Amino acid sequence: MDRKEFETLATRLRPRLIEIAFRCLGNHDDADDVAQDTLLKLWSMKSRLDEYKSIDALAIVIGRHLCLDRLKRTKTQPLDEHSIEDIVSSPEDVIIRAEDNENLNNLINTLPDGQQIILRLKHIEMMETSEIAQMIGSTEVAVRVQLSRARNRIKELFLRNAYERH
Image (cartoon, rainbow, N blue to C red; front, side):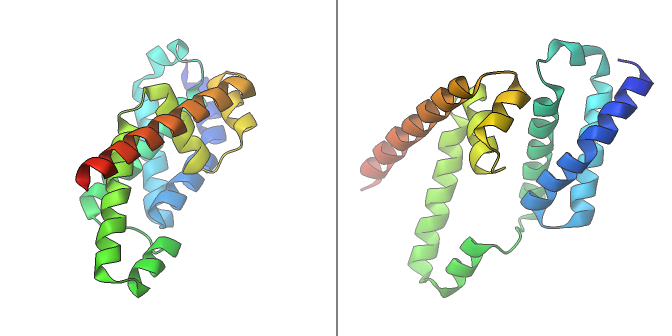
């Protein structure tokens, strides 16, 4: 990929990367930084980008990982409906919900990469099945099947872990 092709790609990807990062981080400046870092990472991989089915999906995954890294470093998260629930919940409820969320994230990380990506795009990025299928170069049916398998596996593991804790 030459510089001109990459500039075209970056111009097309940048708004979507900023949108995704802003939803994760809740700050426009941080979202812009993550988008820039994602594009830099893609530029450093320019000689290998032809190996990927979807550069868009790769960019989103890289951007999400950079967001998660940033959140881990700062240990702050934007206030959302769950945070508001935490404020009015008992301390025990807050601890249980935090442990469940952490366990759920750990369980998602055990899924195969394809299922992880599809699950995160559907439930975190709130993308439609058709968008996901187009992004990863698959069919909607295949995406729904992978999504179903991922959900069932998470449910199975979550219930097993909950049972083992009690």
